[in-house]
Length: 146
Length: 146
DNA sequence: TGCATACCGGACAAATTTGTCCTTTAATTT
DNA sequence: AAATTAAAGGACAAATTTGTCCGGTATGCA
Image 1: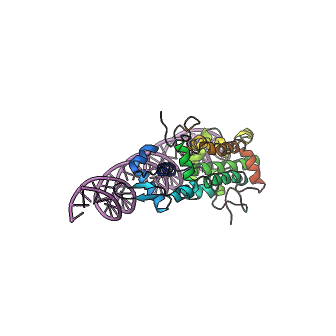
Image 2: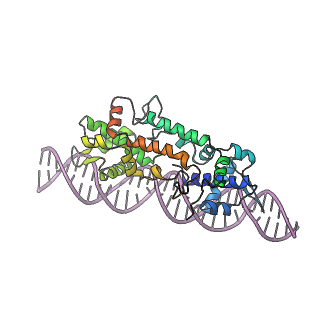
Image 3: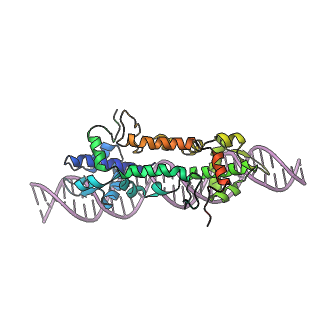
């Protein structure tokens, strides 16, 4: 569905959000450990999110990553996905036609439309803050424990 | 959504199906030209589908690819996708958790479930023969014309 | 000012996906 | 039987994604 980079980006954002909601700033090492992702690669992904202003970073001692209250409230899953994977999966043709549309639809065009619309809606209506709360309450996990 | 290989596989199958419904067997060159895909790469994909017995091939002069009446009737989009991309996209966790389930769900688990179910249902309920008819009637395209 | 911390950025490496080329194998036709 | 046709299969190459490493840069603190 999403690229690895995107999966890490989403999980990282939610974890950062969860900690930010509790007033804690978190470092890369902590993040990677908590979401079970490769550290250096996760750093690259976070850089993209910081550049896209979906996540905030602070250098130096006691620095790290955080979500501002506004970011917690407004940043959606969709923005994270678009920042990392681009809009292809959210708009492109399921069968790979470069200009698939009502004008020259692929044979699955109208069947896929509602599903893609739902996916877009799903990503658009869930903020990182909301998902962070869910994790905080133990109703969702960012890593599997045994 | 799907890999390039899978996109080519689906489009090729539908084109083969369309021609088979008209009693014509088609060669690789023809297929690649009609669906706008790289010839050699499409050959590899078709080999996979033949091995999975979703498409039939005949060597030698006047040989090529075809779908038997039974294949036209019974092979679904889902079987093509699984044969090429495997079941990951149809079953795996959207956030990449290796064992995501009701036991330890990712924060989007229950939101993604209905969408994934619909996708599975969509792929499961559309046969290649049905899609081939649609293309045959000019209601769907496998390649864009300008 | 100097030092320690932690993100930033570039280069590089491994793995996977995508794509090509060429020889072999099987089937049909002459 | 020989020649021709077309898929099968293996080796290889390019591109993309995933992942690592290390020096540079900004920040806070003594």
